[in-house]
Amino acid sequence: MHVSVLSSVFGKLTYLLIAALVSVSVFSFAVWLPNFALLRKVLHPDAAGSVVEKASFLFSLYGSIGTNFTLVSASYTIIIAILFGMNVALLTYYIKRAQRGARGLGSSGAAGIGGLVSGIFGIGCAACGTFILTSVLTLFGATGLLAMLPFGGEEFGFIGIGLLVYAIYILMKKIDDPLVCEIKSA
Image (cartoon, rainbow, N blue to C red; front, side, top):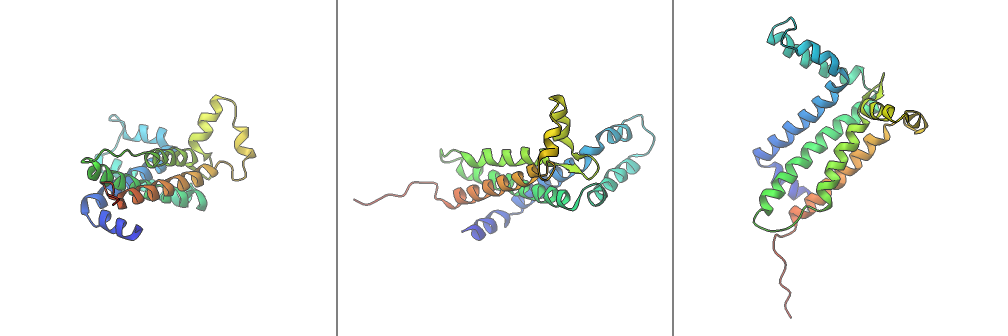
């Protein structure tokens, strides 16, 4: 079932491109987020440097996945980006296919969004830990909670992966189901 659904969806160039573009966007967001202040200064219109130099700088930041992130956080950041791209492509395929019917998305849409949000909370580098979660928790004076977690907040990345896998599973199951109800003979 799952292989046939994946091959029918990603066998079409449109959905493969959607998955790739979303994955690259999520990965870029994760890598560039810890360097947001630097990016703002370098990419400012008044900053020195040509467009080519600024683009080269942007691409050079992709190398920080190997230096600024731990092996675990780099791994789940890449996995979350790929899974979220797959989730969006499958969801797009399902919505387009179901436009003729009136079936709801239910838990698969919520789990996909929950997976991305949880994954975003887990994004961080080796130096600053979970970047977003730490920033949010400092507003409430609760950064000590991260120290009490066994993996220092990386649990959110694992939860994000789990939720995205669940969302993809549910979407594949719904794509595999017929759009119309079966007629049972009496």
